Image 1 (cartoon, rainbow, N blue to C red):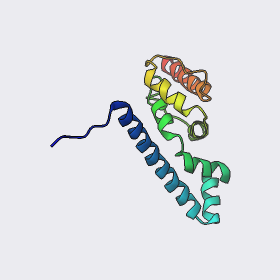
Image 2: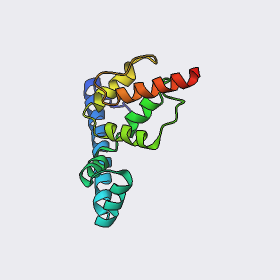
Image 3: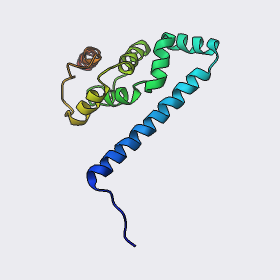
Length: 140
């Protein structure tokens, strides 16, 4: 029996469409979970995260940006640092609402371990400050 194989460009298009559908289904599930909460529970969750209901609903739909932030925090320059909770929350908020997520993932994939933080990154200044602080503490 002969195996049917799609031509490579068609296979890539099909695989890309399937990835998009899986991501859309996850976003719909997160959005539905958020919408199913009572107004009081939503207000409490927003207060816990110090976000408006609009921002929290967007975070639920987009997935919170944690994948990009987790990868950035695992870079050698930041890997062994501890972060104050308020700084980590701010980093998360900026990544969650960042319009450059695709560009960020491409930079992460191609940047070397010693690469400087990219200019398009809204968290670049904070990352560089954390790195400088860690360096100065290590020298003491």
